[in-house]
Image 1: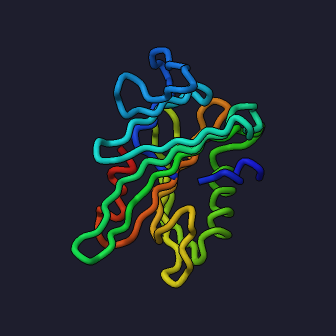
Image 2: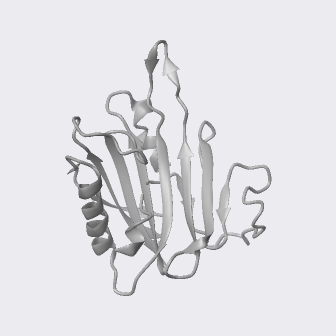
Image 3: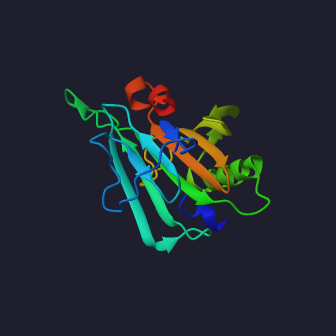
Length: 194
Protein backbone atom coordinates (compact mmCIF):
# COMPACT_ATOMS: atom_id res chain seq x y z
CA UNK A 1 0.00 0.00 0.00
CA UNK A 2 1.39 3.36 -1.03
CA UNK A 3 0.24 5.10 2.16
CA UNK A 4 2.38 2.73 4.23
CA UNK A 5 5.50 4.05 2.53
CA UNK A 6 5.81 6.93 5.01
CA UNK A 7 4.55 4.93 7.91
CA UNK A 8 5.57 4.98 11.38
CA UNK A 9 4.36 5.97 16.06
CA UNK A 10 1.64 6.23 19.36
CA UNK A 11 -0.05 8.90 21.25
CA UNK A 12 0.59 11.89 23.35
CA UNK A 13 -2.27 14.31 23.39
CA UNK A 14 -3.53 14.26 19.88
CA UNK A 15 -6.31 16.69 19.57
CA UNK A 16 -7.86 16.19 16.19
CA UNK A 17 -9.32 19.64 16.00
CA UNK A 18 -12.77 18.32 16.85
CA UNK A 19 -14.64 21.30 18.17
CA UNK A 20 -11.43 23.29 18.74
CA UNK A 21 -11.17 26.99 18.10
CA UNK A 22 -9.85 28.10 14.74
CA UNK A 23 -6.37 26.73 14.14
CA UNK A 24 -3.76 29.33 13.15
CA UNK A 25 -2.69 28.87 9.54
CA UNK A 26 0.54 30.82 9.20
CA UNK A 27 2.80 28.29 7.38
CA UNK A 28 5.92 29.89 8.87
CA UNK A 29 4.78 29.58 12.48
CA UNK A 30 3.23 26.32 13.53
CA UNK A 31 3.94 26.90 17.23
CA UNK A 32 1.34 29.12 18.82
CA UNK A 33 1.17 31.51 21.77
CA UNK A 34 4.59 30.53 23.11
CA UNK A 35 3.26 27.06 23.84
CA UNK A 36 4.98 23.92 22.75
CA UNK A 37 2.06 22.82 20.61
CA UNK A 38 2.46 21.73 17.02
CA UNK A 39 -0.58 22.75 14.97
CA UNK A 40 -1.16 21.37 11.50
CA UNK A 41 -3.98 23.11 9.66
CA UNK A 42 -3.85 20.91 6.56
CA UNK A 43 -4.55 17.71 8.45
CA UNK A 44 -6.51 19.41 11.25
CA UNK A 45 -4.63 18.18 14.30
CA UNK A 46 -2.46 19.55 17.05
CA UNK A 47 -0.15 17.82 19.48
CA UNK A 48 1.42 19.09 22.70
CA UNK A 49 4.33 17.16 24.21
CA UNK A 50 4.84 16.79 27.93
CA UNK A 51 7.13 19.44 29.41
CA UNK A 52 10.30 17.30 29.43
CA UNK A 53 9.83 16.26 25.79
CA UNK A 54 11.03 18.01 22.63
CA UNK A 55 9.21 18.28 19.32
CA UNK A 56 10.26 18.17 15.67
CA UNK A 57 7.98 18.33 12.63
CA UNK A 58 8.69 17.90 8.95
CA UNK A 59 6.31 18.93 6.20
CA UNK A 60 6.82 18.28 2.51
CA UNK A 61 4.84 20.47 0.16
CA UNK A 62 6.58 18.82 -2.81
CA UNK A 63 5.27 15.37 -1.87
CA UNK A 64 1.59 14.93 -1.24
CA UNK A 65 -0.70 12.24 0.07
CA UNK A 66 -3.46 10.85 -2.16
CA UNK A 67 -5.83 13.52 -0.80
CA UNK A 68 -3.52 16.33 -1.99
CA UNK A 69 -2.34 17.30 1.49
CA UNK A 70 1.40 17.69 2.18
CA UNK A 71 3.22 14.79 3.80
CA UNK A 72 3.82 15.41 7.50
CA UNK A 73 5.91 13.60 10.12
CA UNK A 74 6.04 14.65 13.75
CA UNK A 75 8.54 13.31 16.27
CA UNK A 76 8.31 13.91 19.98
CA UNK A 77 11.45 12.90 21.82
CA UNK A 78 13.02 12.87 25.24
CA UNK A 79 16.77 12.98 25.63
CA UNK A 80 17.86 10.98 28.62
CA UNK A 81 21.55 10.95 27.68
CA UNK A 82 23.66 8.76 29.93
CA UNK A 83 23.75 7.68 33.53
CA UNK A 84 27.35 7.51 34.72
CA UNK A 85 29.29 5.72 32.00
CA UNK A 86 26.25 3.88 30.63
CA UNK A 87 24.27 5.08 27.60
CA UNK A 88 20.53 5.35 28.21
CA UNK A 89 18.08 4.97 25.31
CA UNK A 90 16.37 8.18 24.10
CA UNK A 91 12.70 7.35 23.39
CA UNK A 92 10.80 8.91 20.48
CA UNK A 93 7.14 9.02 19.49
CA UNK A 94 6.47 9.25 15.75
CA UNK A 95 3.18 10.48 14.27
CA UNK A 96 2.16 10.57 10.60
CA UNK A 97 -1.26 11.26 9.07
CA UNK A 98 -2.26 9.55 5.80
CA UNK A 99 -5.08 9.75 3.28
CA UNK A 100 -7.70 7.03 3.73
CA UNK A 101 -8.54 5.02 0.62
CA UNK A 102 -12.21 4.18 0.02
CA UNK A 103 -13.33 0.95 1.67
CA UNK A 104 -10.40 0.77 4.07
CA UNK A 105 -11.35 -0.09 7.65
CA UNK A 106 -9.48 0.16 10.94
CA UNK A 107 -9.00 -3.62 10.92
CA UNK A 108 -7.58 -3.64 7.39
CA UNK A 109 -5.20 -0.78 8.29
CA UNK A 110 -3.94 -2.64 11.35
CA UNK A 111 -3.38 -5.75 9.21
CA UNK A 112 -1.44 -3.70 6.62
CA UNK A 113 0.65 -1.99 9.31
CA UNK A 114 1.43 -5.35 10.91
CA UNK A 115 2.48 -6.78 7.55
CA UNK A 116 4.88 -3.85 7.17
CA UNK A 117 6.20 -4.40 10.71
CA UNK A 118 6.84 -8.09 10.03
CA UNK A 119 9.01 -7.13 7.06
CA UNK A 120 10.70 -4.20 8.79
CA UNK A 121 11.35 -5.56 12.31
CA UNK A 122 13.07 -8.94 12.32
CA UNK A 123 11.52 -11.34 14.81
CA UNK A 124 8.36 -9.19 15.16
CA UNK A 125 6.28 -10.47 18.13
CA UNK A 126 3.05 -8.63 18.91
CA UNK A 127 1.21 -8.55 22.21
CA UNK A 128 -2.62 -8.62 22.11
CA UNK A 129 -4.24 -5.62 20.48
CA UNK A 130 -6.60 -3.35 22.39
CA UNK A 131 -9.44 -1.23 21.10
CA UNK A 132 -9.10 2.21 22.72
CA UNK A 133 -10.53 5.71 22.27
CA UNK A 134 -8.55 8.76 21.25
CA UNK A 135 -10.88 11.69 21.68
CA UNK A 136 -14.12 10.51 20.11
CA UNK A 137 -12.44 8.06 17.71
CA UNK A 138 -11.79 4.34 18.06
CA UNK A 139 -8.18 3.27 17.71
CA UNK A 140 -6.21 0.05 17.93
CA UNK A 141 -3.13 -0.04 20.15
CA UNK A 142 -0.59 -2.78 20.74
CA UNK A 143 2.95 -3.31 21.90
CA UNK A 144 5.45 -5.47 20.09
CA UNK A 145 9.03 -6.62 20.31
CA UNK A 146 11.64 -7.49 17.78
CA UNK A 147 14.28 -10.17 18.13
CA UNK A 148 17.12 -9.30 20.51
CA UNK A 149 19.50 -10.59 17.83
CA UNK A 150 18.15 -8.41 15.02
CA UNK A 151 19.88 -5.29 13.77
CA UNK A 152 17.97 -2.23 14.93
CA UNK A 153 16.08 -0.17 12.41
CA UNK A 154 17.83 3.18 11.83
CA UNK A 155 14.58 5.10 11.62
CA UNK A 156 13.04 3.40 14.65
CA UNK A 157 15.77 2.15 16.97
CA UNK A 158 14.97 0.05 20.00
CA UNK A 159 13.51 -3.39 20.55
CA UNK A 160 10.14 -2.53 22.17
CA UNK A 161 7.40 -0.52 20.50
CA UNK A 162 3.92 0.84 21.13
CA UNK A 163 1.82 1.24 17.97
CA UNK A 164 -1.50 3.03 17.54
CA UNK A 165 -3.64 3.33 14.43
CA UNK A 166 -6.80 5.43 14.22
CA UNK A 167 -9.19 6.71 11.59
CA UNK A 168 -10.64 10.20 11.67
CA UNK A 169 -12.90 11.36 8.87
CA UNK A 170 -11.15 10.46 5.58
CA UNK A 171 -7.70 10.18 7.11
CA UNK A 172 -5.79 7.73 9.25
CA UNK A 173 -3.10 8.40 11.79
CA UNK A 174 -0.18 6.21 12.68
CA UNK A 175 1.76 6.58 15.91
CA UNK A 176 4.78 4.55 16.99
CA UNK A 177 6.73 4.90 20.24
CA UNK A 178 10.04 3.12 20.60
CA UNK A 179 12.05 1.94 23.57
CA UNK A 180 14.22 -0.61 25.28
CA UNK A 181 13.08 -3.13 27.90
CA UNK A 182 13.97 -2.74 31.53
CA UNK A 183 14.12 0.87 32.65
CA UNK A 184 10.66 2.54 32.33
CA UNK A 185 12.39 5.76 31.21
CA UNK A 186 13.70 3.87 28.17
CA UNK A 187 10.20 2.70 27.14
CA UNK A 188 7.80 5.32 28.56
CA UNK A 189 4.45 3.81 27.55
CA UNK A 190 2.58 5.96 30.07
CA UNK A 191 4.07 9.14 28.58
CA UNK A 192 3.26 7.96 25.05
CA UNK A 193 -0.37 7.47 26.04
CA UNK A 194 -0.67 10.95 27.52
